[in-house]
Length: 209
Length: 209
DNA sequence: GATTTCAGCAAACAGTTGTTTACTCAACCC
DNA sequence: GGGTTGAGTAAACAACTGTTTGCTGAAATC
Image (cartoon, rainbow over the protein chains, first blue to last red):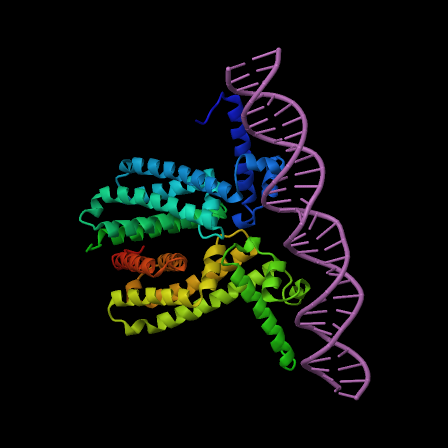
């Protein structure tokens, strides 16, 4: 249902990409709620009217960006959990997890910035799309946590609450890394590791109801 | 240096207040970076040019809002720590702390929304003002934590890292409460208490370097 | 090869934006 | 009470906004 021959659709996809990239670029220095469509089309090298061939709205484009940004996050977390057996020491695993986040921020700056910035931003549809995706994300983390030996005998609410703590901490750490230079990055990742270790200690001594 | 006779200055302060309140009102449905000054003056019932008698810029107004919003937060946390001796049970203290946050959100919705929304928002001066204020805030919390018996023998970095964890958690909880109805509020506060308890357990069993 | 489809364009629309200018008139000072 | 200060105004400025209209020309279909 999505392709006719190829060349036509491919060109359209390319223009669409240009619009999304232009938006991401502009969002480095402003919030989504102040983004203009003329601004976006200008940055993408397209005439204003052309925008409507791809999106109904700017909000429409915003929701697409949310899905795009969190898709790459899902891939990351999947890979991170898959590798977790390789690390026997818990501290090693924490260090690895933080490094995975730092690498992800490096590789997807614009996406991470967008999520962090608009999570509580001024545009309802975007905010809600992020909330919905982060919830699915938290479910995923909760499922993985439940399989760990530490979680034996835990209530689902307790597992879920830890998952929320981890996800929030991850987003916050990623956001902090966005504007950090190499030196600040060391401080931030060191603190993040310490905090994760504290939570880990808490989990080991937790008494679930 | 700030008053001449009274009536004159008082009227000016009142207009200034009207501008700040108008901005806060408008910021319920948009981000600061999309706020217009004509929009603000219109909402405040003032002519556009009048704005410049009070602020050089919209950013100038934004920074004022930051200071205003975090001043009330400082008052809150001061009161909360002052009352902490009244609660012998740790769980009771946690429940009280969460309730203080919920009450604060109820009483200062617009301010809390502004801080949560613009903490990672698109306007540099505002973002940096919030970061600076939250850092002072974290210092305050760290000082209070250091006095608690649990922190005996802890390094200053470890105390500071816990303080950051608490502050971030507080802001996040407050932000979550913003859009919650009565029922969701119960869920959010319950989760927040659980999470604080987990951190508390972690602190009790922590081995500082 | 003729016909249909449709991504992208140029132009025009009425509104809105931030800022400056010259002004009014009440509160202040002496 | 006369002169000064300064908070707030109305009008004008060029620049920009989102959206619609009819058009062009290349790719796709038959």
